[in-house]
Structure formats: C-alpha cells, structure tokens
Image (cartoon, rainbow, N blue to C red; front, side, top):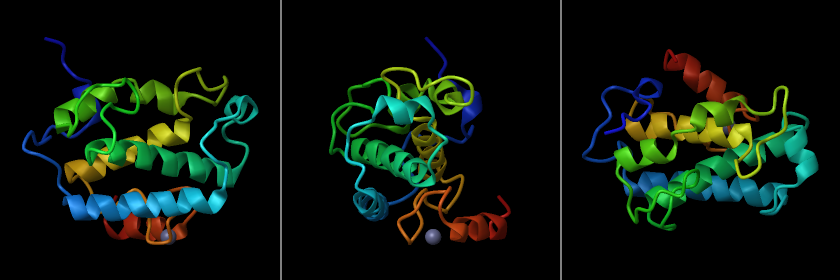
Length: 167
Ligand SMILES: [Zn+2]
C-alpha cells in the first residue's frame, strides 16, 4: 500500500474528520468566493498569466483564493472529485485529501524558472491548498482566507496573526 506523502503534513492527521466545523469551512469558502468575485478574472486561466505566475499581485491573490475555494468545495461535498488528482469522494476524509494533493510540492514549485504545467493550477493555488490542509488538520487556527477576503499575499492582517500564533 502506497504511503501518502506523510512528511508534508502533520503526523497527527485525524481520520475522524477535520478540525473546523462545516459552518466555519463554509464561512471561509464564502470569503474566498467574495474575494474571487472582487477581482473579476473569471474562471479561465490564460497561458500568458500561467507563463509568469508571479507577475501580478492581484492575479496571485486570485489564484490563492481559487485554491482555497476548489479544495473547500470538495471537502464540503459541492464537487465529487478532488481538485488536483480528481480523487472521487463525495465527502472526502483527510486521507482522501492527502491523496488528492500528492503532487502539491511540485505544484508549489512551478513558475520560478518554468511556466505552470498544463493541467496543473498555479503555484499560489497549490500554496493555498497546502495552507488550507494545515487549517483543516488543526495545525493552525488561522484560516487560509482573512476576514478581508484576501489570501496570504495581499493582506498584512495574516502576517500579524501568524506572528501572534508563533507560526
Ligand atoms: Zn486581512
């Protein structure tokens, strides 16, 4: 049996479920959607943006928020398959989530010297999914979208929260 990339995530991964309540996950999902709507980039990812995914701060934040949204929609049962590997599960367990995110390290490394790989999301979406998993795991109480509906790159309030949490 294959071992999921366990090193990337908490050894205390809980098979029973996720740390935040459904209501809290839904609240963060709505914040992510509000942030995405604010930018108005739409759903399509354009090759010119994917060729230089670090070129535009608003685009980066949008990519982050998309990552949070895509993962939380799956966890909350709004989509039947995982956002990265298409893992089929109507309400995924933490194990399903880890399995779906098996390529997350490579996804996060895209874009520094090469364009985003076809079929993969931008690196910021990967980073956001990684941050979301840590929140789902209970590694941190700080959700991946702040109260201003912004991701890690766009809002200073999260820096302050990370500092006070010692993270
Ligand atoms: Zn904020």
